[in-house]
Length: 276
Image (cartoon, rainbow, N blue to C red; front, side, top):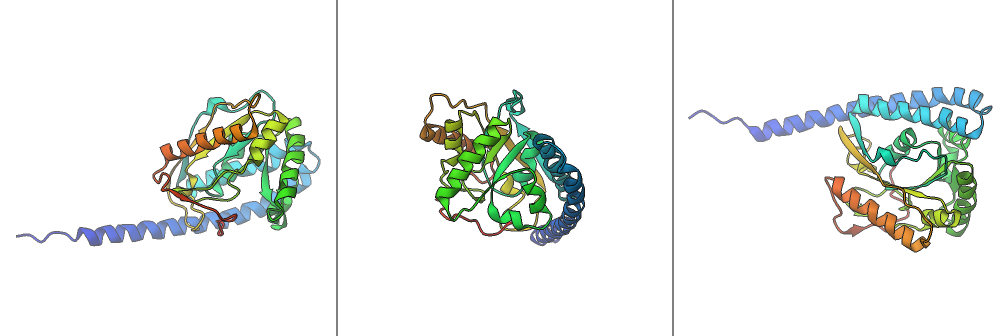
């Protein structure tokens, strides 16, 4: 009888090869990202400072983010598929964007499809060389997460200013990255900004953490699915109602598109720790 091939050994060898290749591609990507960030800071600072805020947003952030996500696609094989493009705002109003947060990928990708917008970000990013300095030029809403009352006031006051200028405000209601299969209760800050400003809401669901994990620097080839909700008008809705509506929509859509739907574990921590 002919000997059977060792399929287990072949599978292990193939897995090792794929991991090695993914590590190599990720290293190349991070090297390129460092060069790109340094190089793009110079024109961002020299030219961007003379542009009005909306044009500066496109010049500094949108163009840079396009390069980053396409670099990740070409180098690491991290692709994307978007459903709901017809819901992207085009009427000139400022919208509150409420998004699932699993990785850094969405912070790069969302500006490429919905712009101009500013993000509510932690104050520590301001001190990152080059990246933080350029980020400051597009007037994001920097918050200190250790002082939650003051952080909420900043979101409401500065957010209303951006919305009134026709600039969207991106909020991650979970407040931190949450791994695939987990959930974290949504904060109501983004919903409160929308109801108090009478701004419409767009909800965004995705499964980015399955290919751009927060707890590992290695990018996993594959397709990230992202869904954009129909417009949620806030007239007649309380903050609690809007928060529940958007949280339910996002969680349900994430379960639909994920290889790892909700496993029942709720995350309580204010920080997910690692950042890649």
